[in-house]
Amino acid sequence: MGVKVIIPTPLRAYAGKQESVEVHGATVGEALASLTMKFGDLKKHLFNDEGRLRSFVNVYVNDEDIRFLQKDQTGVKEGDTISIVPSIAGGA
Amino acid sequence: MATKIEETKGAAAPAAATLSKEEILRYSRHLIMPEVGMEGQLKLKQAKVLCIGTGGLGAPLGLYLAAAGVGRIGLVDFDVVDFTNLQRQVLFGTHDVGRPKIEAAAARLRDLNPDIRIDTYETHLTSENALDILKEYDFIVDGTDNFPTRYLVNDACVLLGKPYVYGSIFRFEGQLTVFADPNGPCYRCLYPEPPPPGLVPSCAEGGVLGVLPGIVGTIQAMEALKLIIGKGQPLVGRLLLFDALAMKFRELKLRKNPECPACGEHRTITHLIDYAEFCGIRGEEAEAPATSVPEISPKDLKARLDRGDDLYILDVREPHEYQICNLNGHLIPLGELALRAAELDSSQEIVAHCRSGKRSAEAVEFLRKAGFKKLWNLKGGILAWSDEVDPSVPKY
Image (cartoon, rainbow over all chains, first blue to last red):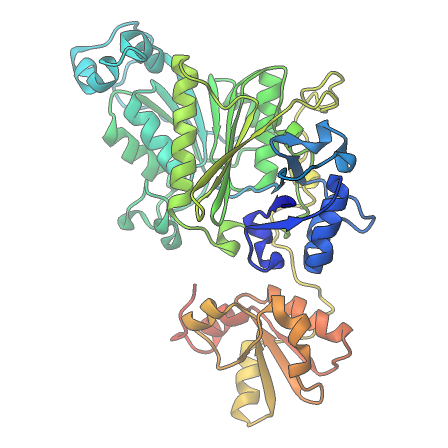
């Protein structure tokens, strides 16, 4: 049992159509790196050219936004859930 | 600043702190609940709510606020009812196609509840008019469909100190929250920056299950009503995520960003800005595909095919689109092209097409970089083929 990463609908096509993926890592950074190793196409949607998380993609560990924790250094443990929540604007 | 306000004919300004006999009957199902009662219903009667957008989100929003007896509802929408709207914009009927949305929406809501005041603003919401329009209302509900307007509405609400009920959707997912605290958090605390234009498709481009905005817009109405009557726990400080396919609701904490330029300790946003520029879009022009991609028009393609030229038609759409209509092309969805490029013969002339020409432009660009030389992008895609060559091909 590792860390569950919940993949948002817009990105599922790049994650083998899965709703969530299990990864391993001690920090959010490691967990996301493990995710993008498995699914290379996800990388450019999550990270910019400098390897930083794109500004319109929020990441949560359980229910806390990592920007208010230790960002990609935020620790994760077995059983935690990482949520990727990109900005969406539809409504019409 | 061409804003036009129309009021319900004959409805007195609902400032009276009483309910008529008819109102008591109409709202009896509210009145018999202690959480609402006469007190709550009077608060609804005196409330002023602005609904920005009368489409997917705006439809259920408007309907339920009107049904509940919100005394004054403002509607903002500049658009005209389109046939493709009817799949989800349930304020409109088939006979409304071609009619300004604001007219059709107001008519429907006045029919539902003739006792309330409906103000209509048939205009784009802009930095020039937003503060004037919003300041008349107590609560602002976002039924818009684009990033620039969302940031505009947020900033205007922060500047005016108005609560803002946020809802957004994409395909099968929704997000909801209430920004009600004048000291934040606000939308910019949640998403300081929008995605670059073109990255997140609109409902027209990405599709949406019609009922999804119905669910999210209805929840927005619920939150607005709770704020008005002051009961229950609103979604303040809580981001509600809805996954319709899994039928799961999840909740995440929404914290205020102390550095937020709009609502933080050192605010730099003191007036409304150019939101199109902020979101990286200049004006309303659709983003054109890279002009370096060689193009062929549908008519030219038809001529060449009739002549018997050996062209490989590459369709980069998805399988379900191929089933709607196709040009007998070879289907390799754009997402699979990298893996399947080896199926293509670089000695053949390849004409790539998609629905409107955007994805196929990307495909051509990709193949060009992979060393293919004889490439064409079908300008305007299968939509243009339907318009210019073969109208029997259905458009979607």
